[in-house]
Amino acid sequence: MYYRPKAEQTLTKNDCDKQNQLDTGEHSHSMKLKSTLIVVLAVVLLVTAALQAAPRMVQQETTFNFGYVPQNSKVSHVFWLYSKGDDSLQILKVVPG
Image (cartoon, rainbow, N blue to C red):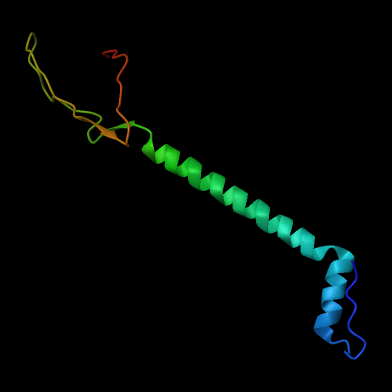
């Protein structure tokens, strides 16, 4: 497709640039690039939102030192587990160490 000015018009630099874009396909290439960029951005946003909504366990305290414990003494400590995310956290298996 060629840009043809009316008979009474004179060509300006802008008109020549438009003609060059049509001839070289730069316009369609930039549109494809913009479309691809929008799709990639949308996918990244969706994946980020899904990861934030997924349940995950958070522990503020991961270790505890009982210090000196006499032999045959019973000790205990409570580790608090928190669920972050929008869904329920399921703990399917616990293996004491």
